[in-house]
Image (tube, rainbow, N blue to C red; front, side):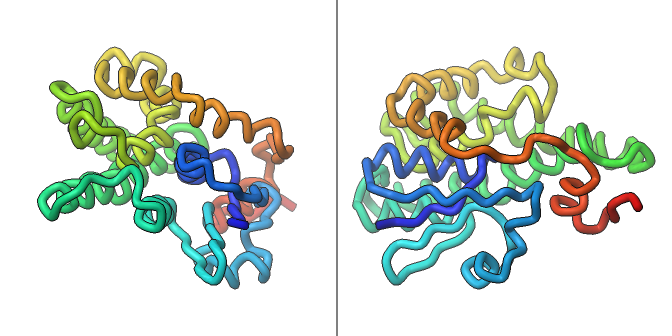
Length: 227
């Protein structure tokens, strides 16, 4: 059975959605990053980057959420477009999420919500601008099509969904007013039974909720805990 190492952050959740869409049996293995479990030697042997998620599929270990999506789609032959041109388009947009949407949204969250007060306005404004710019590109892409690649639902939409759930936390409560097509995509995917099953993972395991000194030290290793 597939072992899925996860927490409830956007990148693992997009993989949870894919697993549920594919109806693959899997064992969810919680890794509590606020308690530092991602640095356990047993886990870093699977994922030397000490990030989530990681997937162990038989003899194959895959880390990085977008690589996992591609692995699952290719091994099952589902949620992928056909043809060389369509594949190139899929890879382009999947990497757009991997290298743009995700990193800029993640850094936007960090500087908006968790960075020290002396981090400076420049960093906050820089990441907020780039996150908003990338989401705007995706919104424009969705203006004349149901899904990112057209009329078919694919792993690119799953990749975007993981982060789209967090748009108000990334950009502020009014952000969806500027991103109506992203909101439409989010609502469409949220209505799918697989998305509802993925979200139900929240009730499977308890993760540390407090963002205290221990959590900050484990999540942002360059910040030393007090005491």
